[in-house]
Image (tube, rainbow, N blue to C red; front, side, top):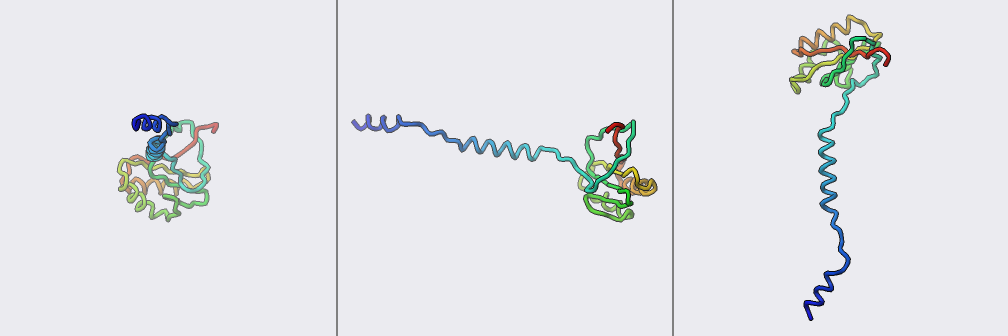
Length: 137
């Protein structure tokens, strides 16, 4: 008789254990958060000049912005144009395969943009580009 009571007790409604499902959702969330690529911005609003030969650059790790007021921004901080080389050397040491993109406003001084470009190359970065937008954008 004891075995019959035991069978009746187990034949009740079955509860679904969702703990493994929740664990799997959290693992997927962490996976996508780690592998997501975020768009890096210079920290200031720049009106880029247009160029018919503009190409999309897939990977730019160091962004330098030159505003229309002749301010230079590196890594979301305003810096002196003479200290660009030191900042780029520090950031390039963190990621040696990285490249530099200079976001120059179309109203900025050409001389300052060339000075920033020169400082980036003196810092040891060979892959330096100036950002532009294709016409019509």
